[in-house]
Length: 237
Ligand code: TMP
Image (cartoon, rainbow, N blue to C red):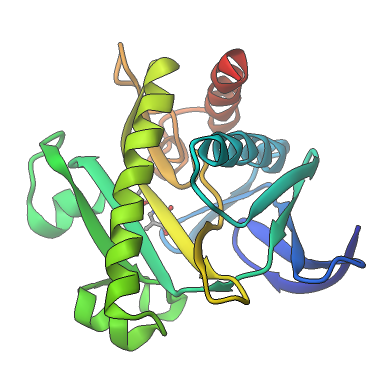
């Protein structure tokens, strides 16, 4: 199914799909990283869990009419996607204050953001993914002003859809990060992954953290938590 390795990131390897023009195979790794790669550990089974979870989330978004690079899950750790040119922006949507925004701007932990707050970060490991404004984004990527507005509007729409989905499995979507990519015909679509690596998810009743913060903060068992997210998602799909 897969041909040559194109790129290896912190959480995934990207291969060209054999005999499938314009398609890629994403292979999820077992590595967990935090603090921009300074904290790293491998968890047997993490790759499968994130592949399963992200596949279910992207399938759900597709049913709701949201276009993305996702085509299908291939096996335990791999999925088939359309090849896109990734736009070097991390689009973060926050429904509540926690994480970097509390440290950076002094918001009190758990301050609700209504309407939700959108932030842009420049995807650049050497610079530690800095927070940027719209003007920077236009100069650091090939997107137009109109496309940037569409990306931000889409991120808010995806937030609404995901909030509903997670609410049905008793999870609060606190915040999350999206990436977008450009297809050969110029269309911009949602790309990358949506998993407990890229979302903050808190149990609705206990507010217990059920995402990568358990690894970042050393406060729980990453595999147990990710397995629980998958079980809850599977119970409703
Ligand atoms: P932050 O509070 O650290 O800025 O993170 C906001 C959200 O974005 C959180 O759900 C985790 C996610 N995120 C990523 O997926 N990748 C990253 O590199 C960072 C910094 C955050």
